[in-house]
Image (cartoon, rainbow, N blue to C red; front, side, top):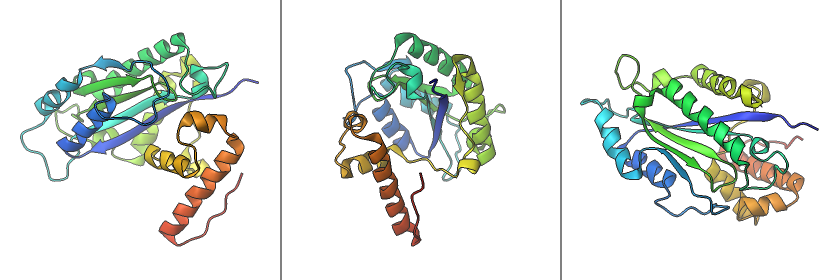
Length: 240
């Protein structure tokens, strides 16, 4: 039975040079990473690590408003089944042709959506569960101003960005996910996801994939609802 494959896009705002440098250190593997699943080498598509901060500073205006967004990080990926259609649960594996088509699409989309001149870092991670790209760019708008709102300034702009990425990879058989306003689902940050896995005794995604996935999802869902209840003071029920 054919499986639907979906476009994945996440964004994050970076409001200081320290935050930009920290993101770059992670993306270029300058700090230890717990969840590497294979020995594939990550691929640097634009700029090496030492070039990131000089390139960022070169794009900065002289005057920056207090608490302004200095850079935006974007993560692009596709459903795991796209990269390994014969074995979607084989975390860390992917077909070379599928990855190459994804990379070409990601580069073309990023240059068009964010501006090639604005991008200070483009790294593809091949050593984790599924291939994905980390892009750092300084949000310079068409008028030459530092203006993050132009790129990620509202929920509608972000929804449009998701739609554009999905449209860009549609020739690869990729679909756009259902609007969150209809599903009422929220994104789980990766750090929280791994924390939940550790609490469940699933130290890596490889261990997670080998476990009973149905039970694991119920456990993760229950744990998330428990954390949400503590935060809001309200009770929530897990629905399948």
